[in-house]
Image 1 (tube, rainbow, N blue to C red):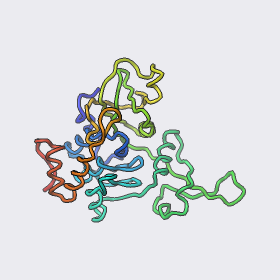
Image 2 (image 1 turned 90 degrees about the vertical axis):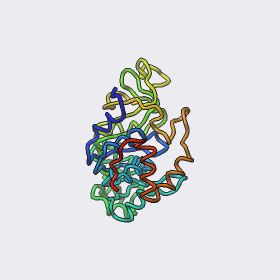
Image 3 (image 1 turned 120 degrees about the vertical axis):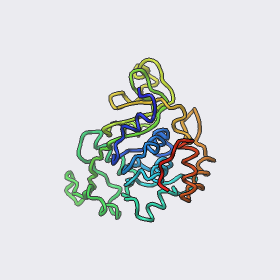
Image 4 (image 1 turned 180 degrees about the vertical axis):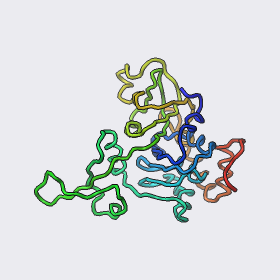
Length: 274
């Protein structure tokens, strides 16, 4: 096990396609903070299927070149301010998806096929904007029956948080099975965890259904409260007051810098451009 989140962040190359879960599905804020502190650049974020606070922080800290997602928001706290400003100014490339299209593309990689069919996007203007999507005739229908082929997506890196890891290197994510899809599809998967458990969770009939095998985990780091200010079920809840405070501060560049200084840099020297 890597000693710190910084060790994992150091393995994420600039320019990587990074798959991130939404705020309700165990993003690793510890890793996001570490990427900002290491001055990551040119990252391409893939929302699985949407992005939230983790993406807004990385965008505001100039770590991101592209966003591929169905949405970027802070949920009940409102718009993601740093994303919104970057998108409006054109300083960030934004590639629109739908939630089913993201999952379908990752499931194609998970299953080892170059594409998978999907119906729901047909008729929307999103199709024309994707060279990696094609409309074709259903080969099993004699009647006209168009279907969308969505190309597989292979993230360079998947980043998320988990409740437990064990001595065998497995991680437990409970009902958050979309994290397993991300891990299966990504070339490298880096996970921060709340706690370490002895033994092998795959030997436990109750825990095994919520476990991602160590085969799909590249490296781990223990980071208690590593999802905060977001939540981990049965441990700590999302800090709604914190999110509301962030949403207000991050409306301006100065306010965003103040937030980073207090909650990300925490007294360390910031390299965020003036």
